[in-house]
Length: 243
Image (cartoon, rainbow, N blue to C red; front, side, top):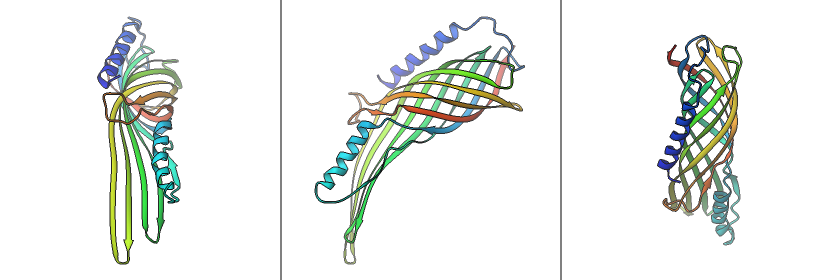
């Protein structure tokens, strides 16, 4: 599925949700029937990078087969996720647009008197999703909510092999790098709570993302899966509303 196709599907997803909302929503948050909020968030996510991990270990294994005892230090661990977006509240129903970014690394390092060998990899992902959801207990201080998101993703994957050799006072260096980019899909289900602090609402959200990057039309050597749990904390403020 291309990114354009994913965004068309997600736009239809949001349109159908808005069309199904109650025509006469009650006033919420003590403000207006329809309110647009913007938010920023940061948190933690992990990744299902099985094929990427196998590919990286195969590269490292080719050196180990030649007698170079190069250990793998890390293989795509979980990392920070950041993002933001805009959400339209119509009564308790919500529809929004969300952007998130995350990246993870793998590394294998070796060194002796003759030089060093570094094999590193980085995978980074942007997701663009539309959402639908419902917020309970509007008008109360603690407001639970549930949300479903659907959209597309942009991914970048690199593997770098860097060799530095020393011969007395002479040194030499060689670098080989594989770079690939691709598009894919992303679906997220989550739940959380909102809590007002003055005009700002603090929000905590936790859920699971199912996502994959790669297709026959791009230059990725395999599909890069980045499904996994996502936990974020953030804040949102109202920017527009009508009664």
